[in-house]
Length: 394
Ligand code: SF4
Ligand code: SF4
Image (cartoon, rainbow, N blue to C red; front, top):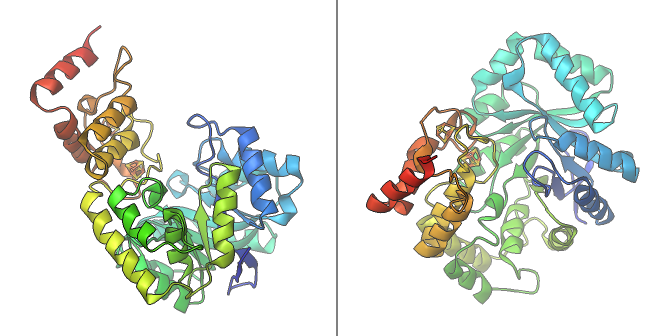
């Protein structure tokens, strides 16, 4: 495993971290046995950073139980996150944090993040509630080691937030298709210049830069393959690790074999190891990706559940697939996502535009409007009328 040093406290962190959000299992119920197998393999391969969050249903408890069963707590750094929208009083900070320690079966959180910050005003609100004193108290008690935030706001707001507090680290979305998206390359450099450790999330955009790449994009990568760069995932991860400002990237690995694959890439992908020609290859893939990526959904599920039962990420995935892999492929995925073969299909046309989903989307997608686009593509004219009538019957 390759390790990079947190400039703030000297922690040696594996360049590859385990994002626990995408553990296999039904929504809200990660499978404990599979999670344990993934964590065990990750530690075996040298991974020492595990990322979870209060808001990932069932996830903190699953991670805590696995680490306790495996006896691995002291071999890993645990990161989890504060759901700042749920904090109304200072007492809420204690209540939530104590629950997190209980779920994770630990007496300390190594890396504690304010979750999904989209504007400096959100930090200002927490400050007014006394979070700075609260963090200082937890640090003094040894219950929080490093404090940071995960970010999904604009490029302009990012430096403002960086300068609003003496952060130890930040976590940003970063990948070769999003150099100018959210914090972007400018934000990565700004954070590193301030001496922060920078952790990267969504390096493969929820798989859209890996197994979901178009055939045309894959051909571009295959033509330039080397023994180190065989798969689209290897290209995407290596591109992130090529940046010396990146301390660690998180990958949501869903099977032990995926851990093996990514860990092998992590061993080799040192900063500055991609050639100029390889960067040009990636630039061509970015052009191709932009052509087919109509909705920037990463499949994070933060918008779910929809009260009308609509499978929002599934519908967007089908929509993008219809441009990347052909209309019939997309339609077939849309029917599967909408369970159209059941008695009560949850079509995008069932959306009542309540707006509940869009408030939670870290990608700032206007979900009801974009679901209407999905409807126009898959339920045009008479097809839509017939499906709507069918879905409302009985
Ligand atoms: S706006 Fe539409 S998709 Fe979003 S939660 Fe409401 S009904 Fe569901
Ligand atoms: S629409 Fe937004 S919140 Fe929902 S899965 Fe996609 S990226 Fe996540």
